[in-house]
Structure formats: structure tokens, C-alpha cells
Length: 386
Image 1 (cartoon, rainbow, N blue to C red):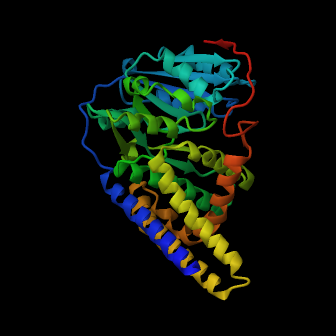
Image 2: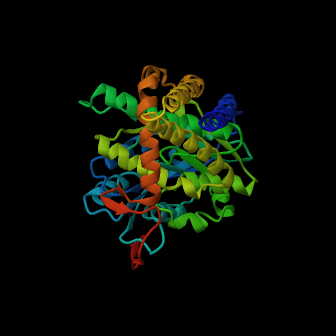
Image 3: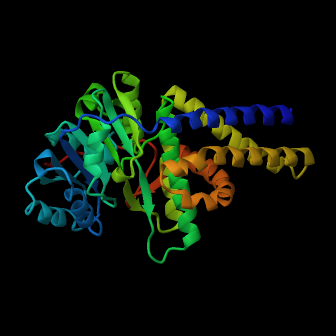
């Protein structure tokens, strides 16, 4: 029985990997006609250390100032985030600051904040990035080329920026794991079944957002202002979705400083997966079951040597599958230097994924100095100043 389960789950895993591998070949699309206008929405909570540099990079674009605006939305900040953002807005005509003091009951704070920015946006294309991100001067210019007439949403590359003093191995393993999410995003978009996204570097037509009814019933899910929107636009079936692999449009963000912070982030990411569409849940469930079987067989190996052998073979299948996807994937992302961490990362990732997903779905996670379950909790009064 153990042999049959091992073989079946291994075949499922290999099938999913090969299916995704095909999608990496579709990351280079045709160029659009250009000339679009952009509204960059940045939600920021207590980001006084980052918001100034973020706004400076976003405002320093190669396209004309009259083709883009920047809306910084303070999500209940109690530090100097609003003051710093206002000081920038006073000097730059295409930058505005919105302040949210409370979030309504039953709505994710992040989704509510970005929704206020979208509501106030004047331009055709909405672009998300976060306050701890830095963008290139060619960022919006590259996004402009990525939108064909029927393109509704574009996901771009985001990579981790090294923090001076951080252990190099810790950074490399974390950066590779982060890169793997981008690789899966690109591959899944390429095969036409989008799974995950990243709001650090995400652009979409305001019309596509409205046609998908915004966040709709997904508004209560704490995380997923990116993934859930991606899948809602995809489900409508009227717009194309594209992964922008051009490094001129890449964004950098900060790595988590501690292992505990990494785990909390992965719990948050895992918490939203049960709310994905049926095709996405089916694929992720196949991979998750494969991972759980490895751990179960390894544990049973203390009493059954055959189980230990089966776990070892499945672990080799896992490593081989990751290499098949990540070797070309790191090339697409321009992060081939991370390949040296593949084997070690594969061992660490196995228990991390299982524990993070279970903890995120059934437990609580920390985010922006707050504790959340995967859905928002008790009602609170609303008083937003816009």
C-alpha cells in the first residue's frame, strides 16, 4: 500500500511540475502600443523608515509626469508615515496622500486601504507596490509595453534586496524561496491557470478590476490582495493575464530579518490558499499531499525500513522536480546565483510548507504588528479620512 501511495503521489507531483514547466516558455509576450496612464497605489502602515525612499523611486520615472500619479494610502499609521508622505506630496504635483484611521468590520485592512486608493485613482492602469519596495526608473515604461489591448493584468518580477549584516546563507535560502513563488506565478500564468501573484509589482486595468467586482466576497480574507484579484480577473475570462519578465520592470523588496519573521510571512501566504479557485486548489493540494506523504513515510520509517526507503525516493523526486522548474525559472527571474542553495532549500522547505500552511489556515499569524486569523474578526466602526 505504501508503495502504491508513493508512486501515485510522485506521479501527480511530476505531472504538476512538467505542466508548470511548459508555462515558463510563455513569459515573453508581444509589446503593446504604449501611451497608457498609470495610478500607482501604495498602502503603508507604520513605514516611516521606508516610505520616503519608496516614493522617491516611484516618482523618478522615465515617462512624463502627466502620465502617472502616485497615491500613498496610510493604513492606520501611528508613526510619521503620513508626515513624510505629505512632505513629498507638497513638492510633487502628481503625488497624493490618503489616510485611513479605521477599517470596517469584515474587510481585510490591506484590501480596504488599497481600495481607497483605487477609488481615488484617475488613470487607466492601477499599479501596486509596497512601501518597503524600490523600483527602477524604467518601471512604468516597461509596464506600458507589457499591456496589449486585451491584457487585463500584468505581474512583474520582485526579488529580495540584501540587508547589510544579514547572514549570507540565511539570505540566500530566503531569497530562493521567495524566487520560487515568482517562478510558480510565471509558470502558472503561462499555462493559463494563474495561481499566485505579488502586490510588490502588480498592474491591472481599472476596468478589469471593476468587471471582477473588485475583491467582492474575498474582501474578508486578510491576505490575498494580489492572489485573489489575479484569480478573480482570470475567472471573468474576458482579459489576458501576462507575466512581465523584463528586468527593466523588476522591483526589489526587503528580506525578512529573522527566521521568526519568515515563518509568520509564510503562514500568512499559506492562509489564503484554501480560498483559491478549484483548479488552483487541486494543483496545490496535489503538491501538499506529496509533501505530507514524505514526512509520514519518513516517520513510519522508524518502524518500517521500506517506508524509509520510499520517503528517500520521494525526496529525490522532489529535488529533481524542483531542479526541473527552478533552473530555467531562476534564469527567467535573473537570479541564477541562487541555484547553489537548491538542495539545502529543498530539505528546509518541506517541513516549513507543511507547518506554515496548517498554521496559517487553522491558526493565527502576525502581520504589521497585529495578529490575524485568515479571515477578519469582530465588527469595528469605520472613520476614514480621505
